[in-house]
Image (cartoon, rainbow, N blue to C red; front, side, top):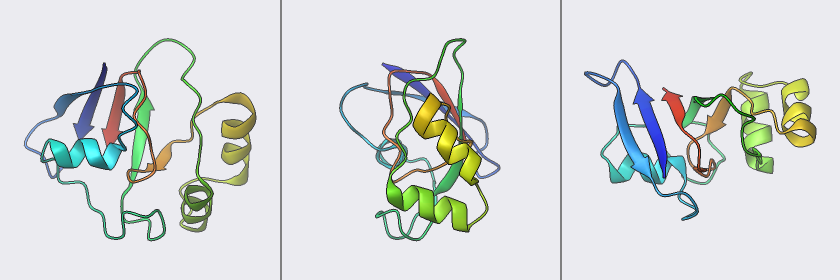
Length: 115
């Protein structure tokens, strides 16, 4: 199980939910399941409307952070991440600060999601 804490001015207070690791749910799916108001439009990784910050809350090496090609393109074009951050994610498993909720698969680690 992973604790996913959502933090936003849209919320009265931070909300922590439990996500089952290994079920391949996207962060957007977890948010929708718990009525968290994360913005989205296409759900396909092409519009970038669901971009949000993800911070790993554990004091250990984050799990591998695969970025889809759509995420790389959309987040780079929007200025959320740069080429160095993409390379660090691909070669050193260092997660970039921004992800697309519709593409990010929740792993077995506690995270803070800011939107």
